[in-house]
Image (cartoon, rainbow, N blue to C red; front, side, top):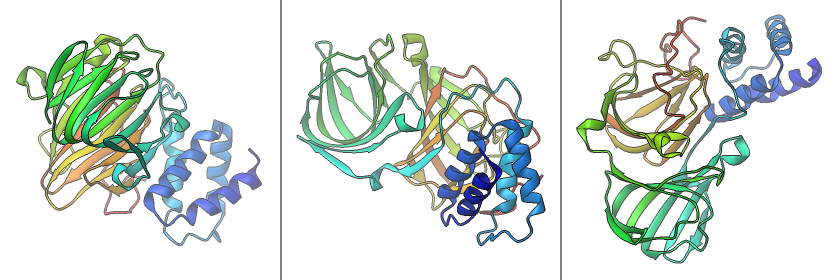
Amino acid sequence: MNNALAYRQVCEILQQESPSGFLECGKGLVERLATAEQQALFTALNAQGQLQNPHGRLDQLQYFLRAAEIRPPDVERDGRQFAYGNLNDLPITSHPYADVHTMDLERKGWPLNVHLMKLDGRFEPVTFGRPTVYFVHEGTLSVSVANTTHDFTKSSQVAIPGHAPYILDGKATLYALDCQPNMNAKLSVEHFDDDRKKNKCPCGWSYRIPLVEKGWGFSTHRTKISGAHDPTNDGFAGHQHKKTPELYFTDRLAGSTATITIDGVVLPLSPGMLVAIPNGTMHAVDCDGEIDQHIFVGGGHKDDFWTPKWNRLPGTGGTPANK
């Protein structure tokens, strides 16, 4: 990419009004540049005093470039991109007895799409070609698969292999991971509310279902996060992963506000919010009460945590304290 083109793109990025739009465009530009191009752009930005910077984001963009420069060489990037949005706000596709909101993550390099399904009745998918993982956002229903019917409650998760016929029946809102079919996945019906699944991690108390052990290529967690997500709060800290991409889905919020900080940019969270976090990305959740997150964990991560020198932001929309 030539310097003139990169410079024009920087000007457009700095004009982004929404923090999420800035984050997606800014990090997207940095990830597309080769190392030498990143260094050249950083030098050019330092030399440009006349850049229009209406939202105060020039320092943040420079931070993205510095973060890419110090990233360890064993951070394995595979083309996945950041994404953020509330599934309730996305367009609806109507099916018999179900309205479905879809976030297309495959176009952003992820091996799956994400759906929020509002079910009212008996839903029988027309095709069964793709493995799908479901859990309940609210309501009650049953799932019939492999000639067995299971009660499907808020604490349950069902992972259904491709080409396996199944029926969902009830009145509920579901979250679904619709995966690419190239995996040898096995049926899994499990419950999160089991203390044997309870683990302490940098996010909070995490209840884990190791789907990776059944051929899914990822695991799922239901994590309860309280208060500030930093080292002073019972050991829970902002962190990043060298190899593990994650999806955070906000299921429940008991409190008035919650945010997620992605590489220094603060974004609000609310029920139905989906955040796609590529590996090598610093992330931290804060709330004034308690928040439940369902988390897709690529590969299961096996304690793949990386926390270099990194501090909280001085305030919403600010730049990293250790810039």
